[in-house]
Image (cartoon, rainbow, N blue to C red; front, side, top):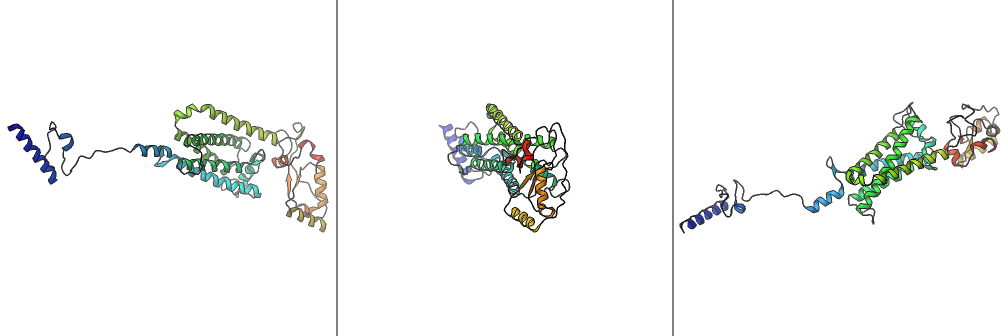
Length: 342
């Protein structure tokens, strides 16, 4: 009884010390109430750190693993928006036949960029390449925002959202690798900042998608990615091989481009007609070696022919590896019958 009375008094003193807040008294570890009543100096209760709730973890996972404190979906949305603005600008230039300004290039003012952006590789099956890029960047931006729980695309769950995002970024990265190869081979020595920026954005978006999904899941979809890359490469190769026909027999001859001298003076009627054709958006497609083309130029005369919107179908000349301009092929001009078409 004496021992029980002593333990009771000890417990009362501990509780009194806790109530006073001085925390001087510490229970012995073997005390029956130690796990619940141990006190430390200046503290009225033992604080146990608690981890994030499962709900918070799920939400953070849906937004993508963080990169420098920012979720991957937010990074993807931001980079895709930049790509959308860039390709939107290039699409406007392409559709309005305006010259692109390139801050880096020979001669300044976008000379080198213009050589690439107006080449035969600037369209796929007749569709301007910047327009295709703008659609792709816009889709990635929407899918990334959807991943951040912005319900922009109803009916697409998280699994399908990631699958579409992976397929789109894989296609963009494959196409960018193909165009970088063309830039270093077909346009060796030419600087195109727009092309390099777009390639950087495409590769970055692909890597962010891979990081977000995880390597374990990516390994399960390698076959799908290879199939998508193969389809993209075949489509691009087919587009450029069919849309850039060569002059029949051009492998046996070589003609360097030259300018035809117009000797006839333009009449007032010819000048008026040239102005009218320019106003309505009419174009004249021809080749420097085409006799009928040169005859028509001579009929207009020196002054009027300068007013025409003339498209040279063989700006690089005729010979092995020199192809017809894509713009001429798109309107149905046949290289083998050029001299008989007007």
